[in-house]
Length: 340
Image 1: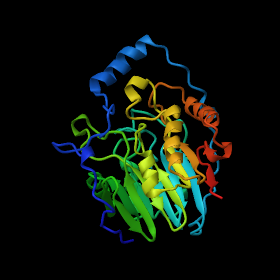
Image 2: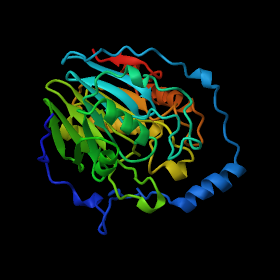
Image 3: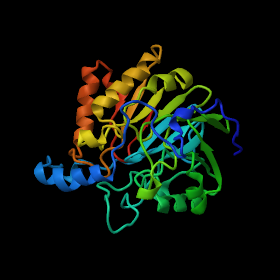
Image 4: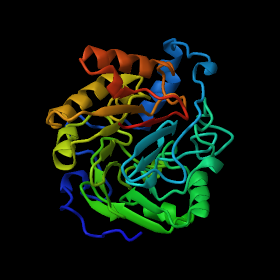
């Protein structure tokens, strides 16, 4: 696979911090710091009772039925592995999004957020992987052990990453890596992938905050267009992304890890924010049908809302907004769905 190294446009300078690294360029996008994290976890959690989580059995595993070894070029399937990890089959290619197969989203496997549900696709059942697309470097999206396993099993895979992440991948065995800034593209066997804006932050340690970029990705074949928003808060660029790279057949948008709102609101969408993002996308869709898949929920307990709240709120908001029920995919772990 030979990528194009020519950006589609010059990257906007506003998300590049003057002293190096990156920042969110929009008003009211200030990300809270470690002191605020301590206030939340050590003070607020002791003062406020958290709503109970459901029994883990309320998240049953489905049996994945993606097409092996590859789908036909005109087919589009999506399988939810869990959290933000999806297997997308598009243009005859197998694409992994933010893959994590480890038991914990953590720098160590004896502590940190643990899976509620096993991966929806056992690692050994994966089809040949052509592309791995990454949104940023947080532990629940960029997992070192998973990267090493994928790089060993699929050495010819093309890796797509935002600026600054390539060194991490290369150190763990990935070979064919393309880094992109916002609005820059690459081409892989007729599929165009574009790095697009997101509102979040980066850093796997306190001293490395925002030294690497965060993003979403769009994928365009000859007749299908898919938008993976990555890990993001609500921001004003959803319309611009759709104007420039849509209309989209499918959008994968995050809906979980949002409480307490004062702390999480600038980095994670809740279902209400997701509905607002959909409104931006649909405004630029020019009447084209849009299917929305909800991600970033139901796998790791990261924040204070009950684990089953995000999909319930998303369904309610979706119907209240007047959208067709069939155009919202709330998937079971391991479930595969296909675009008609």
